[in-house]
Image 1 (cartoon, rainbow, N blue to C red):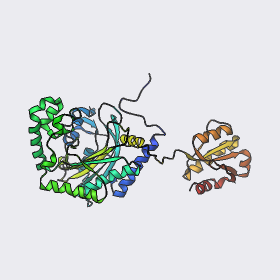
Image 2: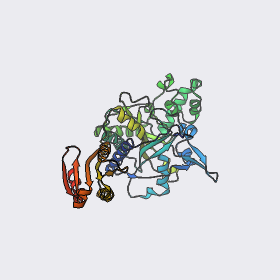
Image 3: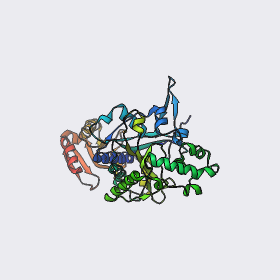
Image 4: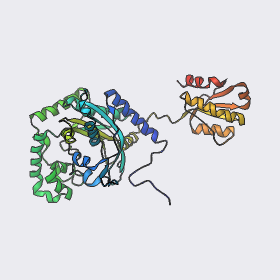
Length: 423
């Protein structure tokens, strides 16, 4: 029986994995500059965590979660997003008692949603995300957005669009929801079954419906910006002012609501405008939330964060034809001629590797010509050739594959010579 990768998942093979490692390295380096520390949480959690945090009216909870019972009948769910787990860990481990405020966290790992697979959308996908918990300063909102934009720019992306909105505080949202109910109620029968349920649960999410997004009532729906109270409006103006100050252009979209129930105030998405990127243009999204920490059993604290799909990140890099400086070659290939030289090559190879030099040798007893071909395939910068005659004199011939120059040096000096030339 021939096995295949499950639908909606993918194998990331050598040649591709180096690109993943590179963008993950960029994300970690940017987080370090912004003083965000890594958190690693379990891949599965108690189902109730996501029911209470993500929201029972969301598509994620209603349609997309991978939920199962463990051997004791407890309901468990593969994590569909990272914020709930990060906040759960924040509360459980009493990180709110830290003298640092806000507490700045980041995560990189697989998430799981049962969605219809398509370009840029998988059932197992990798998210990089951050959470800044414990500050109501609008400057943190701008910082979080800046961090996300900086990660993309470090990877060479240029054709980006930042879209922002304000969801207001609880008072503003309540007034807006009432207006949405009045707006949609007379013709709610024209909408999908999900939106008909959302009218009573969370009418804001009708604006985010994939099926009815082109309905005329969606386009004419009252804007949350019309219902912002003085405090919410001032907060949004401060966020925009900080973005202006650090030179990040943005577009305000009154229909941007995000898909999770815990957002308030600032919401944002970063999109790719690259030609040929595809129908799903969103690269990252996030926003500010309140009540989530308290819902998990912690104190009343707000937070803000985002999550970005690494699959879409790489797709945007391909669409813009951005070159990643991924080095897939090796420093040195150790070639040998003769039985004694073959045996000695094992310890020489090990010595190079212990010196931090990426090195390889032949394991198929190829002739010297075949070994040089193998070195070419591996894009070796140098080839060190050892024969029984050289072995008698404790020397080895080092060939520079770029210039063609070669020199005979002491075996004991091989690593130092390569390191001096590698700089």
